[in-house]
Image 1 (cartoon, rainbow, N blue to C red):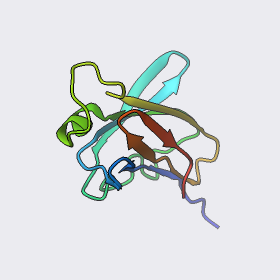
Image 2 (image 1 turned 90 degrees about the horizontal axis):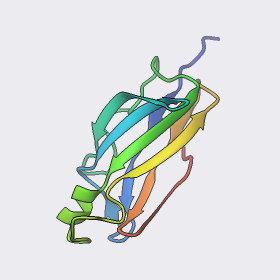
Image 3 (image 1 turned 90 degrees about the vertical axis):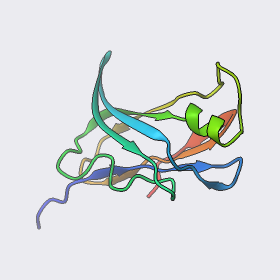
Amino acid sequence: MAKTGGYLTTHVLDTARGVPAAGINIALYRVSGNSHRKIAEAVTNADGRTDSPILPDGKFKAGQYELIFFTGDYLRSTGQVTGENLFLDTVPIRFGVDDDTAHYHVPLLLSPFGYSTYRGS
């Protein structure tokens, strides 16, 4: 049986408003020690998801990664926050991948003053 490659998906839900969070810029970095190398960028669509896996099969490898969600513009545009120094202007999520044949789904549940994440399916 042929080995199936893994891939990475994400999405953002605005838990304060109870809707998907559209228009959030996301950057994905490969992390090795103190080194961060940007390997992908995407923007959430109307469903709060990226249009395709942020890291598709063939590029997904075991190791450490960091998703950076640039949430400030979204929170301002929805009227949830004001001011120059936001509490959650960016949200970093660092995670490890052991099985590069699996689907890793790392969502962000966002509100103006808190967030959570988990490994989804």
